[in-house]
Image 1 (cartoon, rainbow, N blue to C red):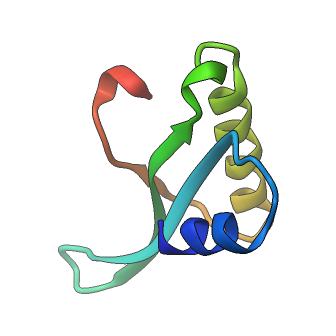
Image 2: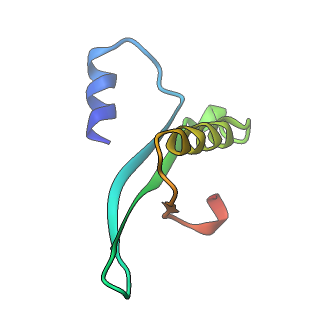
Length: 82
């Protein structure tokens, strides 16, 4: 969120939607470590909600994650929104 605030402060752009990913690790029962990424939140400017922008952003970002070799993505947040 801090990055978005900086972008907003230094640029004359209107951010309609955003998604934030982070890296995480999961230790499996057998001791192996599984790297993954997770996202939350996805933000949509109120005037643009329910127009498909969030869905497009999620699909696009998941495809990009796949292209970069990520095989696991956790989604955090309330199930009604995703």
